[in-house]
Length: 329
Picture 1: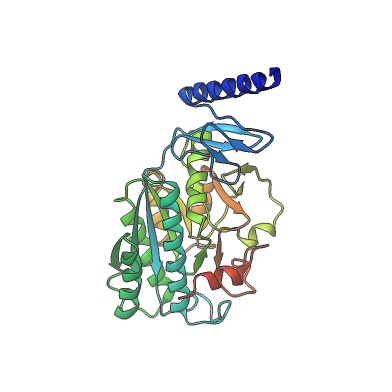
Picture 2 (picture 1 turned 90 degrees about the vertical axis):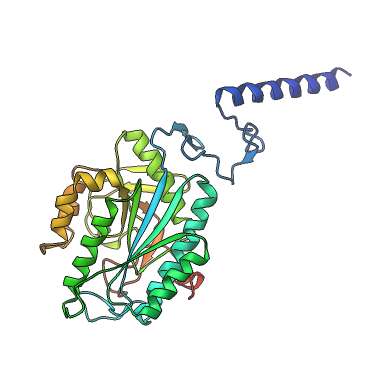
C-alpha cells in the first residue's frame, strides 16, 4: 500500500511540475525515456519553437529575439547555358534544363517542409530568367503554382543579342538584387544548379533565427559546404543548429541567404560586384564577410552540380546520387 501511495504521489508531483513549467515557458526532459513532457514530444522530433526558442540537448535553450517572418526565394535561371565561364560538362552530363528543373523540384519540396515547421512564415518564389524558352519558363512557374506557392516571373531584358554569358549572368544578378529591396524579410539567392535536401530551407531558417538572436545582428547562411574552403587551413568557429553543425566562413559563391536589411546596407557594393568584373568574381561579397558573419553547413544541405573536378562543386561526405535521384524531373 505504501508503494502504491508513493507512486501516486510521484505522479501527482510530476503533473504539477509540468503545469508550472508550461506556465513559465520551461521545458523538461525525462532522462529515462528522452521524452519532453511539457511539449509532449520525444528527442527525435523538433523540440525548438520557431520564433520563440531554440533547444539543443546538452546545451539547453536559446531565446529567439529575431523571428523570421518571410522568405523570398530568388532563383536565377537559364536553361540554355551549361557553364558560364567554362566549356565543360556537369556531373551526370545532362542538358542544362535538367539541372534547372531538379533545382526547382528540390526547392519546392524544401519550401513545403519549411512551411510545416514554420507555420506562420510567408514564402514566395521569384524566377529571374535569362533566355530560357517559353516552354521551360511555363513549366517552372506551373511547378511552383501547383504546390500553392506564389511565383513571380521577371525576364532579364535587353540582352537577347548578347553572346557573352558573363554579361547576361551579371545582368540577372543585378535584377535579383534590385528585386530583393522589395522583399519583406529573408532572401535566398540561389543559382539553378543547386539541388537541395528536403530539410535544407528549414535548417537554414532555424540557424538564421538562432545565430542572429545570439549575435544580435543579421547574418549570412549558406546551403552548401564548398570543397574549396578545405584547401586552406583557416580558423573557424563551430556552432550547433537544429540538426546541423555550422562553421564560420569568409568566402562563398552567389547562392546564399541573408536579410533585406543586409542587402540595403551593402547594396552599392553588391551592385558593383554585378557590374564590374573582379577576380574572383565574388570579391566584394567576401569583403562583406569580413564585417558580417557567414555560416556554412556541415555536412552540406545542397549539391552544386558543376564539373566533378571543380573545387567549387561537390561537397564532401554526402550522397550526390541520392539527392539527384530524389528530385527527378
